[in-house]
Amino acid sequence: MNQKDPRQIQAELAMPFAPEDLEWRLQKVVEAKELGIAVPYVTNRAIMGRLDDVVGPENWYNDFKPWHGAGGKEAQLCGISIRYGDGFITKWDGAEDSDIEPVKGGLSDSMKRAAVQWGIGRVLYNMDVVFVEVEKRGKTWCIKKDQQERLDYAYLKMLGKLNLKPAPAGGLRPQAEPEPAPDGQAAGTQQGRGSNDAAGRAGNAPTGKPRGNGISYIIRQARINKGINSTSTQLRLESSQRDKLEAFVRGEHPELAVGVILTDVKLEKRQKDTVVYYMLEKFRIADTQPQAA
Image (cartoon, rainbow, N blue to C red; front, side, top):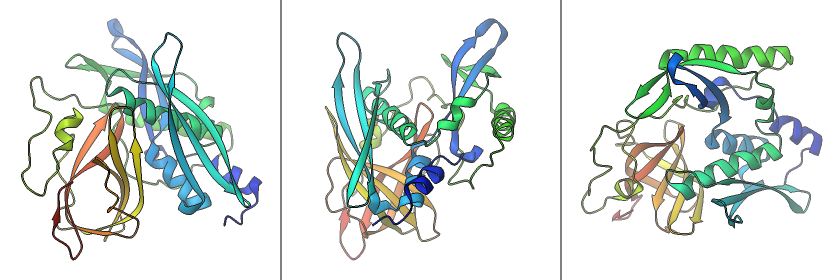
């Protein structure tokens, strides 16, 4: 049970994130000048890490519900519940489905907004307008990679004005903008027995080299997400080197429970919009036969 004072929890949840835990999106582009306005967001991985650190993984959970707007886009509602005393308090917010992978985009954005209800990342509303140089990659306008220093400076300057200091970084820096797949590139291929072809069905091209080969992972959190048209198993993994990451497997996998150790792991790095995550394509549950994900 959570023993912290509610005010202490509130203060710790609202602590500013490190620049490495932010992602930046283009809000507006002036094509003629190759300039854009960038706005910061906290990654869902950082939000989950903050909740784990402040109240403990056993003292919070999230829940999603589809929301049917009147005449508008379909949307998703997310509720984040935190234990206080003998019960939970839930705060809800929602977001419209995105244009690419609509439901998954709605789930991701709705969780970010629900986190703000708890004060997580709320300080970002104090950001001034930040102009960045942009470039076109394929048909998409993206923030130039050399603009990261400018973004970090603008964020830290804002915190300085508020006499605030960022918390230690909780993970790897997300990319400022998605790397579009080359035209005509296949999204994924069949991997054979004992593998998962969910990455191919997900509609995203890999954004990095596979990782995980030869490394064992223990499952720290596991949850089954049931959307309108699909079901996936969401995992929080910790490697034998103490690295932590979020991974997804297509379908419902009750055997992937907290405390289970995975070996012979193959992970494919993916990116939807600016959210970086991993698809678990192949694994073996310790002391068992290979499992098909």
